[in-house]
Picture 1 (cartoon, rainbow, N blue to C red):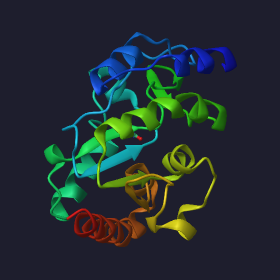
Picture 2: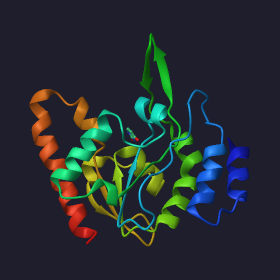
Picture 3: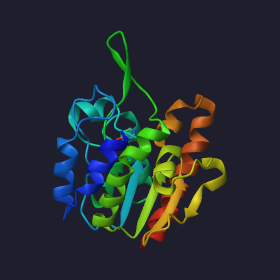
Length: 203
Ligand code: URA
């Protein structure tokens, strides 16, 4: 991995397209993924959302946030008045990592080492997109954007990521999917309230 990182940072893409071509050609750090899942959305979008890593559906379709967590995110964005097509969506880690259980491919959380391996890409990507505001969805995105492991419960809300763009920390939509049914509604309402603040901050 150390060698791979050195080789990556030697590259000097001049545009988001060049960067994406490098990402597309690269091998997954952990073998298994079908393809790299690149960021999606208009360059210079006002808001960029950063998730963790592609899931099963994202890996198959080659697009970020198209599976169950992505659909929940889309619904919450719509409820908060944020147009999904106007936002940029990407992930801290660009390849799906999973464990096979029968026919199912169960998502495995990336390690801190994997997050730091992919961090150079994410940094460059956000430099090119140059959004007004970057939203970290969950702890892995926070680790990727700050280099620090910070509990979401403490850091939720506006944040500084040491860059030109403003930052905002909220939960990952898959956290909402995992909650017990009786806790889901309140957590969803709080998530939509966060996204409304995000919309206001990016205006
Ligand atoms: N979860 C993520 O973090 N990103 C995706 O693209 C899908 C699910």
